Amino acid sequence: MIDFFNSPSNRELVITQLVEHLYLSLLPLVLGVLLALPLGRLAQRVGWLRGALQNTANVFYTIPSLALFVILPGIMGTPLLSSLNVVIALTLYTAALLVRPVRDALDSVPGHVVAAATAIGYRPGRRLFAVELPLAVPVLAAAVRVASVSNISLVSVGALVGIGGLGRLFTDGFQRDYPQQIVIGIVLTLLLALVVDLLLVLLWRLATPWARR
Image (tube, rainbow, N blue to C red):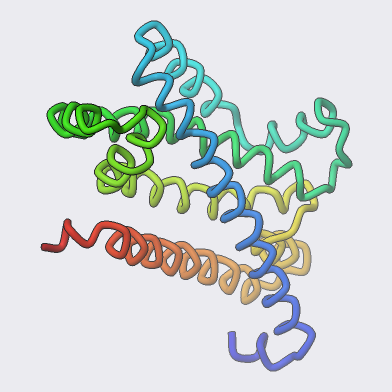
């Protein structure tokens, strides 16, 4: 692996693909969380939507990522090699994965706390962001960590349709019969998943100082 990094062009390639991999995995994670929050809230508050949303999310998540990367350009009218296809697909996957955890996290907030917030004048919107979501973070954080690892692995699949990320190291390595490049791609993908997971744990601890006490 040291020989691979001796070449300036190889180092530049790895850095470029690493940055693109981060962009393609973390942007959908943020967008997916923002999409899953209102959907999970609806599933929690509206009884008949609870099962419908969950079943829809389960069915959607069974669609193979490669198939979705190929189908989306025809639906959205985007170029086949546009990174927007990966961002949209992974945003939908993330939202589908997080709908139930958001619902369960909000359900985990003690009823007497919600009642007390309502009694002192908190309106539903303010109560959600000021009381319920902060208390739901410990339950939701675990699901977000799973979604982050899932996104980082799924981005690599995009290399099969010519979209960047560390998966390009796999495909290029196979085409050039260069096992060293494949190993580097695998190792960097694993390290990226580990670093992102550790950062999310740190963010969770900073957001919930009362949990440490």
